[in-house]
Length: 86
Image (cartoon, rainbow, N blue to C red; front, side):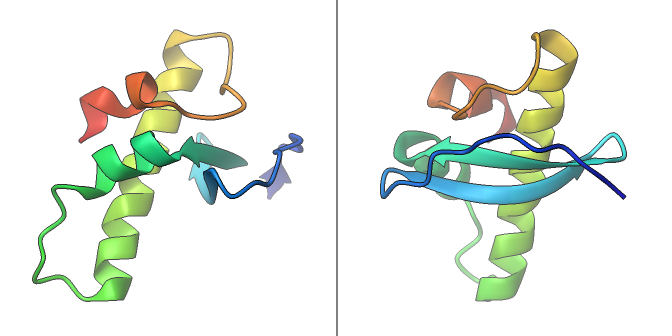
């Protein structure tokens, strides 16, 4: 397994997800606003584990789009990066 090493600044304003995109593992930091956008339409009937899996898929989808359309993953995924993946 290839792991891309990126320095992610750990802080209380970011949530970090580890996702696999294109055969590589990436650490994706999300801003609070981006996390809120991705989680606001989760089905409330889902249990915690299922909700986490759906959220992680959305993060992976946003990361994949960034890798396809931009020069790489930004250090922190912002709301503008995840808007199409809600």
